[in-house]
Image (cartoon, rainbow, N blue to C red; front, side):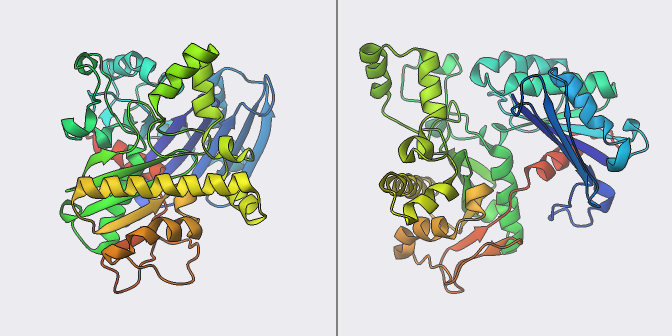
Length: 406
């Protein structure tokens, strides 16, 4: 059983191939037997194609390709030709799972793609203009290349789709509800995976746990997970709400935006650029959207970098507190994604204010290739660092949704 996973973005595509016959333990993510990337950001009129196999064979080349579908075809060709060949034919692929950012209110789980699903992804483009068009283009490209193969959409929003109305509804005019203006939440595939993985590590049923999952990367979000469902999250109508992020502001007073429009003549496009690309760690530090570089500068005495790190931690602690209130208790706090999996400073500083709850961390914390529990044995709350496996989660969802697969 071979499942292809495609994450088609606006300027880069990532893909991998899983051989599920090698997965003996469904709770552990196997390594893909092949993975590849297309990146159009390096040079105009060119795409950088890289591919590698589990055995270590690799390919890196620049191609004169601007069309995304043509790029996907070239990428898939490395599955069946050259040193990165792992298949005899593309027909050996049994199904394809796609990351799709926005599923709106219609989709609460992964779904087999048909004409209605494609129409819904198209209809939701105004809510995810940077992502849904590329996701849909990837679906069409696979249809053209692989024909009538089962394809599954795995929506970032799906895990949060059953949030209570009080958590999902904005306190604006009631007409917003009919207009689809509500809190959707994102990073759902990651939150779902690490919540289930946390249950496995704790030897508990996910339905019996209260968890706060912290997806901290260039984009950051928290989820309050109760009885296996997301009941609250920090991102909202767009991925801009909530925590301070790499280059995104997170939540700000909307009055600031009104002020910039009225007093400074800002357009919608300028505000979009400002809030999504020029804010967050990058905007405050003036250095980078990469927390590692900002922390390095802070340790060298850079005042703006110090402020950026302190702000990041302040927002993180505050939002953890809000998720805690939504849950009414806590069994485990989970850190994942680039920052969440690797920064001992963030683990320590984020957890420190919750010592009054009996949360205690081990000394001499460090990164680990394995998922780990970093709380002391006597801590009343477990603190887990889990490597998110979104690609594997998409592959599993693809297998589950394609009930007619052998």
